[in-house]
Image 1 (spheres, rainbow, N blue to C red):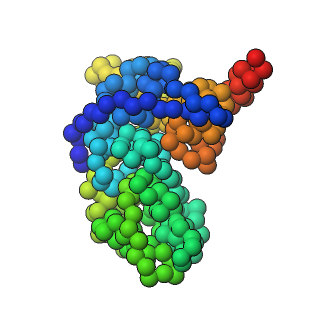
Image 2: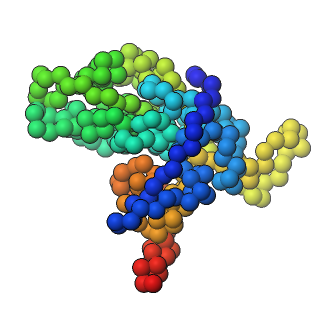
Image 3: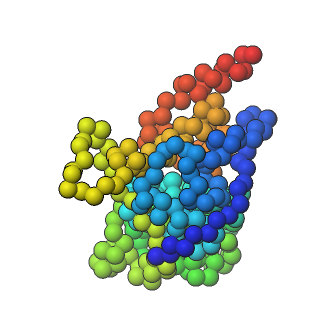
Length: 289
């Protein structure tokens, strides 16, 4: 596992609201997944555990490379970490596509990912130059795993029903709720694909117990209080809420700032029970002026 930290210069995100462009205020930039030091997150006022800081050091390093990445550990933050890696990389102006492999019928996975025949491109081609996050990758079959391994090794794909080889430039980030090691041992997941992905692995810290009424154990050495432990899931929820407030409830503009598609944003909103009514009210108030 790589732990070297690489810092990159700041960049400015731009939100598109209708036909007007708005530069994102500095307070939003400070919490957005833009290229910056992992240690430079104090302006978020969100608190950080040491495990989270260590993970972000890895994210900073990995973002400066083109290596495939395997995300393990806490499921709640994997999609967010994948988005951060993409947005901090040199691919940030290219597509970031999230694919839940478990949600695609087995007979459609090939055409969904790789395309079909001559006239239908798949998600990999649509993300050319950018990043694809493959969640629940262990749910795919041997044929798909073999084609993905070929893509990682050669940069080449073949659409379903075609023999034509196509070259694409794509970064793959993968995760699963199942243990990759156990799936490999059981013969359900390709060992070669696992080792290729596992060349760079990032462990998502476990969710912490936030119990405000808990008392510290006097036998435990002094360390971060419960309030200091902020989970990655909470950070994701607060950040998404801030961006939506900044865009006054404009989901299309918020998705652009977050570097995700609308479906991913809708999942984030639902996952964190974010109330968009206040943001929409602000937008209506401004429009009425």
